[in-house]
Image (tube, rainbow over all chains, first blue to last red; front, side, top):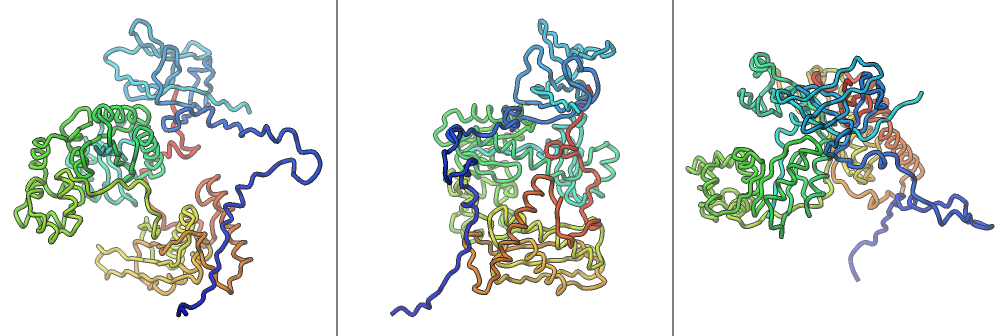
Length: 148
Length: 417
């Protein structure tokens, strides 16, 4: 005979497993099951659509009117991907002499110009010269505009 | 080979990513409560600002040279760290995240270590804006040494330490205090025996090292000889205890403020427990006065245990408040408070008490998870227990906090265009 005391051990139930049950929208009791059940798809995820490189993507608020013809209005939300190399005519976030700006990046025979696209003509382009400190911070991949 | 990636002046670099005016300018980041300097850009180091120095001691240099001063912004640093570590994990077969700004990577079987290192460094810089240095060698301790070399002697920020003669040259130039795992106590001891640099340490008799510095010291010595003794820790073991503590922004005397702080810490501990799916068997509370002030130092500390291990906010707050009542002394100026929950077991292994009120437990569980969901969606402490207080006069002093550029909608970077 073992001298061990008998023990009753109560374990609480992990309720996590209950949550993972697949729920069929159309129920399973009686009648004909929905013919759509086999075609259930994953939900569309807008974040995944907008953010291709999560570790390199940042959200930024645009202030001002110099890019309105490019579809960027005051207070729009920009999705900026730092991992992308800028191509000609990309909209970029750049740093010029220590200041951030958002402009259209254009290259013409090695000459880089940051073009403004405002509705009026009061917004100057920035021609990048050797004496300027210039860096492309990231490429603006999407603009989110609130219509209300 | 093992690589150690280390972010250069990490906190200062995070601030720079979103603030180009800081480029080539001195930057320092302060500890909780804006007390001490805990991060410096290279420019600040060159001005002679010391690591860990109380900010008032450096005030003169800071004002004279227009040093940019920031409070710690852990929301920002944590998010940037996550980005860097995720990238490094995708670029290496095996990774051990060692701290907020350091990671070991196993490059076993990879021939072009230097090229891989360069690629990692360039990718991290391009994607996140954070500069990193990478040291590569045959053991973790030597990888640390190689990282030291990468920071000091290279332009590219990547250094492979492989050749025997290079290793011994570098160890000769390295004081023992700079070695990984050799603290100030051991380096003082070693110096008293005439051991100044790492090369001299490696030449010591192994028995002597074992006797004087335990098996940890022996491991460091063998690792420096190229024998791997400290393995990669890829799956961090679940935490055995969780601690939340803070220094107060102002001196706290009254019981009510102390109670609010203890309730907040207790609630945070409960939240962390639920995140780890664990339950704690005991809770401890600690309150301290300022050890550097003229008046007598007091540190109150007591624990109590639960009949049934728990991760319920109300259970833990109630227990913590009861302990606080028993250790609170009137008339003192308190500087710090903390709550520790310990002896953590997985929540599905909790043994119930026969007389336990099961219904109440299920209700509480629902309440806790609802609060967690709301707070995760709407921001921390959107919903909280009343005893945590509303005004929170005792909270951290963070006067020079930068925006949480990556984690709060209201704090996003704005750019004029």
